Length: 351
Ligand code: KG4
Ligand code: ZN
Image 1 (cartoon, rainbow, N blue to C red):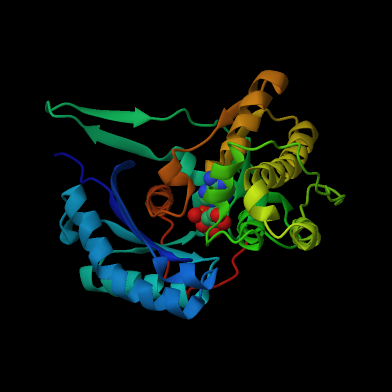
Image 2: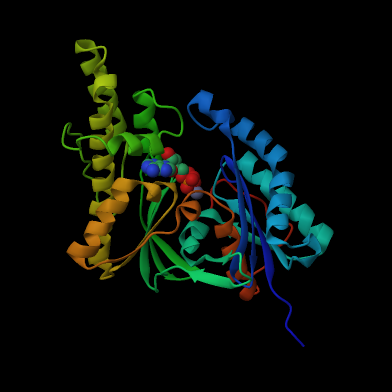
């Protein structure tokens, strides 16, 4: 008798993206994300508005994910959801929906740590169907254990020592702002809308990264700090604007290139130190900031200079998504690691 496939629905709602994905026997069948534009006018995520938008988007996003995967909800083996870390109101929407659905379908529930899922995004396999009825599984180049993962997003900056799927240790973290926040806040100072990271990246590609110099913090061990950079950018621009009111418009590309270079250098300095300390050259990056062209180019260079094996997930698996929640749920399901209805969402959740 053929064995029943393991089909996991993943639900992600930790910040401002409502996402759902379906994974069957470890292969991604669908990955749907609804982002929330309501925050742009406020220059950052407004938690109350995010929760409301999750409420509106949750059902259509899940329906779309099931439909695209060609899966009936009755076929689901388990429901995986992001338990934390993140915005509590946002997390509660996804967690409540997951619990209700699991109860209704009488299937197990799997809680997923969002940061662990960012790391495990490296193990997402996707299936692409072509017009001819041939299905091919694309297994991207995956890191082998142990590896180091630099997880850089709008909420987190961590260097993670990954010994196995569920054996991870944070060996370096930010003491204040996250790397994505540094991009977003510097962009905001220059009048760019939220989230400014991709726009800074875009301008930076046409700018001179040596035009302006910003301070590089001296933080002990493998930790990071970005709040000093934000203040330095703020004061520098304020002083320049006094001399020339058009300073930002006339220098936006050079400003973005110089700020980006500083952030990338801060990240890479610590990553290099970690690689030497741990004697590891398997290096992965994850999280929204891994989409940054400057960071990717710098890692390419490390590949040559330091003989690193570098792993960068596909763009859609770098930013917040539910494919990473579903694949993490799949691995947990294989371990029979299910969670109780009594477990609640939590804004802070260690790795
Ligand atoms: O992982 P993510 O989608 O959500 C969080 O968990 O925070 O990361 C979002 C962050 C934002 O701060 C955004 O500005 C940044 O990633 N980001 C970028 C780029 N694309 C997204 N930062 C720099 N360059 C990019 N190309
Ligand atoms: Zn994230």
